Amino acid sequence: MKRGYFIGILLVLLLTTINASTSQETGVSVSVVSNNSYLDLISPQNTTYQENEYILLDYNSNLIDTVWYNLDNTANTTINTSFYFQTSVGQHTLYLYGNMSNGTVLSDNITFTVQAETAPSGGGAKKEVIVEEENITISEEKIPVTIKQTETKEIRLLIKNNKETGTNIRIDDQDLTDLLIRVSDIEFYLNPGEAKEVTFTFSASKDKTPDIYLEKAILVTDGLEKEILFYIEVESLGFLFDVDLEIPKDPTVYKPGDELISQVTFYNLGKAGETDVQIEYVIKDIKGNIIFGEKQNLIIDMSLSMTKTFKLPDTIEEGDYIFYIKVTYDSNTASASKWFTVKRTPAFLSSLKGFLERNGIALAKLTAIIVGSYIFLHVISLINLKRFYPGKRRIAKKRIVKRKKKRGKRKYPKILRAVLESQHR
Image 1 (tube, rainbow, N blue to C red):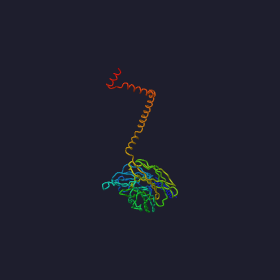
Image 2: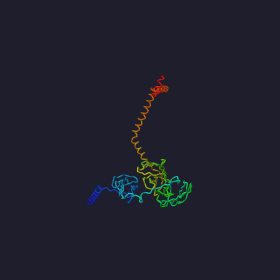
Image 3: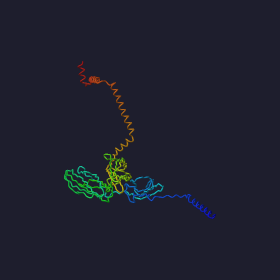
Image 4: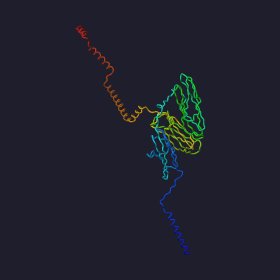
């Protein structure tokens, strides 16, 4: 009995000791990192870009609170969307970082090269010659084409000869894309005043990447050339989203540094309820170069209208540009676009405007002083005229008397004066 009692006590003491030792703090913390967290650079890529080219910084991330980057180990910059940037000639390394909620930092980097632009061979750039507008006219010169994958569409243009003589016309396809598949008339003759309708046929394959494409045809006559520019929006087949884009300013002419204000409306025509979509805003020149780009994610129910404002770069060149919006959901896209023009203010007017902006207050004060002084002197002169200036009749009399006195004092020649004196005697 006593033996069993002592064994029980020993077991209780042993269990108490084990429990105490396991309940003590060890000073080691364990954190579990979710396998679903990631941060990957999509662009730039390990390749060579041209000087003055806009480079896209794009990435994919999941379960990341804050994202920042730096170029060549310079200052860090926090970002929340993709964007385009430019950098100097040479080799560069872009570092991307993402901070998770538990303090873990993920990173990725890429090295790329920017090379200087080389001057074109053959003695300089080719000079573009445009056909005089009064000689050959085209019904449209910048033609929008919206086409879905697997779809074929025809665009008809009216080309007219306004000259007093007939002319041969040839249309050259620059073959910038594989979308323009046929031109109804490559070469033809137009009599004076005659017009001809030419059909351009476009087709997008099932595998054609949804995007905006620029296609150029050249109208050649009498050794001169005129461009016909098509901008083609390829959309996903069966995608039930739509985009409406308006630029309220009319005419759509801007200066470098101006703000481009657009009204955008998105329509959800298919999936019921809120849908998370990616929106891409891009500005391209007529050569297809990207001048500006930005991405954002939006949640759209049935429709969503918003105003989007962009500041044009101060260094943007004169010319025609296209503002393009693409909405993407589940690898499908829809798009919309508008043309606008950039023109610089003449140097003299720009300098005058700057002078007026800098000295506007001083000039206003000086103008007020000059105008006030003129009005004051004018009033004083009127008062003096009324008080001291004689009436019209008195003025006339004085003038008559003055004339008579002048006649009396008239000087005669010596001989004539001697005769008059002798007669007087």
